[in-house]
Length: 226
Image (cartoon, one colour):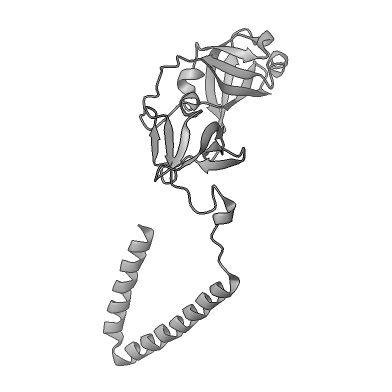
């Protein structure tokens, strides 16, 4: 099975290095020295990785036979393709290859069918699962454990627990501005009562008030951070 594992970007320096947009979770394996990669367009490949390094957060590769900036720039935009055994699995049981996920049935916690997983979108900050619904519409589901608690390859399904509105915008929960204003008013009233209580406490005993107030603040802050 062929998988796209990277895309060649701009040339870097004068010795044939190129920047690479990584499209694999295992760059050390797929794009490491000695890796032989097919290309799209096919006419510029195959390419053998000669060396690689990370520079300013970018992966830089040098391919055998590419000796200068001109040759490196000619590769710009080329897709790098690796041959992968369909039965191969990532070492981490919580990780999956794209081809393992595409085609899975996507269901809710109660088993209701949502649609079919048709694409995995790799973004810098997270991965998204494209779910195509029976009516042809699509929904993007963040691939995080809170929203996608179960991937069952044996049953060929992905179980999701989406927040309201993620799959069907009509189900989104809307907070009315007047309700938010009311909450703010209640908060202001609460602040006033607290200040009054603090003043009364200060008048009664500065020492006791300081210890009690400090202890309560530490406890609340600790819970909020957790």
